[in-house]
Length: 254
Image 1 (cartoon, rainbow, N blue to C red):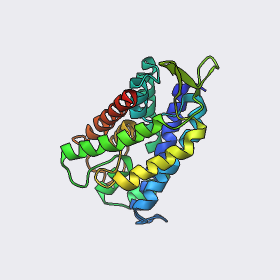
Image 2 (tube, rainbow, N blue to C red):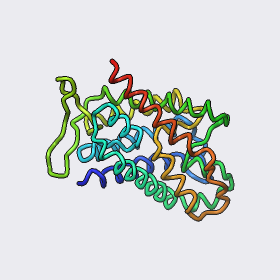
Image 3 (tube, rainbow, N blue to C red):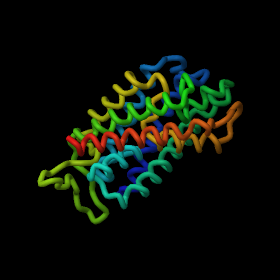
Image 4 (cartoon, rainbow, N blue to C red):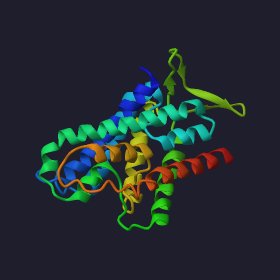
């Protein structure tokens, strides 16, 4: 499978689980209505687990532009693949959000709360203070990407069929990517971030997780939709990217 296709599918899987669990909790007349934050964080973690386990062998399963940028900045990923990966991840996020909408279409119609519906597609802060919101996303993504650097993985298969598992930096072989063997620890890492740092902003920690579904929210038809809150959209994009670059810098420093 092409790494680009794998990133599309992997990110779509992530959003299908993550957006799906939020829909199950916040929309009216669902089996999981009002089941709470613990259910949401576990749903997102399982989305990461399935996406990484399924697609890791083909693309490294970054499923997150911040991870891609962080790996490239640390010298562990080809800069020439960064933009294609980021575009694929954003498209996958859009597709996953559309699938959630299709699965919960009747429940969208049964719910009037505009903010609850937006929460299925994108993040928003509980206290809207952009500097604080930005810093929260920086910290959460820093922990994510820094943790990823120390999780062993089998790498990914290139388009010519070669399995890449590591590159040599300063005479030492360093693994990269988020292959299948790394699926469980990465899922637990995301679970921990959600439980510990998710309260202020909803822990986007992933530009594609927010931008792709936010675009879907803007174009999909359903009643009581409200605004897509584009004024906030820069925070879950640039906050995670900044956190990833800081993580890469610290990784290289030590």
